[in-house]
Length: 305
Image (cartoon, rainbow, N blue to C red; front, side, top):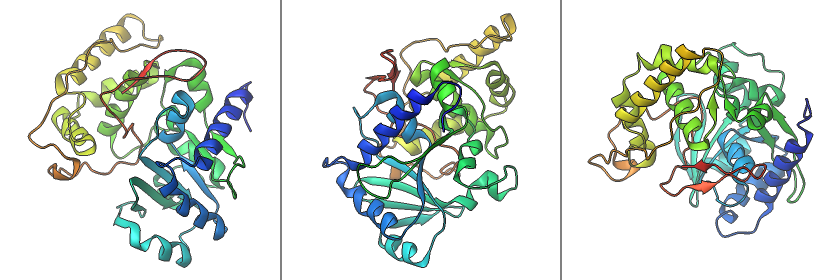
């Protein structure tokens, strides 16, 4: 249930998620058999993370290609259904599956990294949003048992982040702080949101230790190109350091400019060299494109990359 006056935002996201799942568009139809199978098997399942952020901010204007689904349990029946679509097993115990043009990451609730490591208590799906690094990822939506119905929304500071247009840390413990720096910077820039002071301090601490070239390679592996090169990342970090020194308790926006895109010697995601950076326990905007789209939240205009 939404708190602190965010009921309208919850209802908006609930409606958009239901509409997305029920829509009979050519793009979404290949995903339907998986959702129907989850319902047939009586599986409680939740959509998670960045896809819901994009539905909240962009509405249904653009379809994602990547979906994260968390299920209560990998039953033998579910594993049997998924087997023909499995691309690989992840190091965190989940599955990457390809269904049509959809890339789906699916894993058991108990295998969520923060739960498995005992860092966050798991009483059920209501605790799932407590495990994400950023507040803009801290939301999950129940997959309804039949098309057109609305599912439960659980969140942990997500609607506050949307209302305040500020990116902040939701859960700090993370085995990949360099990825978290990249996710925070690119999320804030693409949404034109400010970065909260606590998150700025995290970026300044770990950003100086991160190998920016490796973060560029990670982007290239995910997108086929480096969307934000080393010079851009360093410029952002320098800007945050200066602004934070001058006003340490004030959120900071990144400077707006045309980002330099480093086109590396490979052109396709699957042709990129393996650098050990292909997995991370947080969602970033994996649907980045050069085309910029207006935000659909509250009539405010911004851009997503």
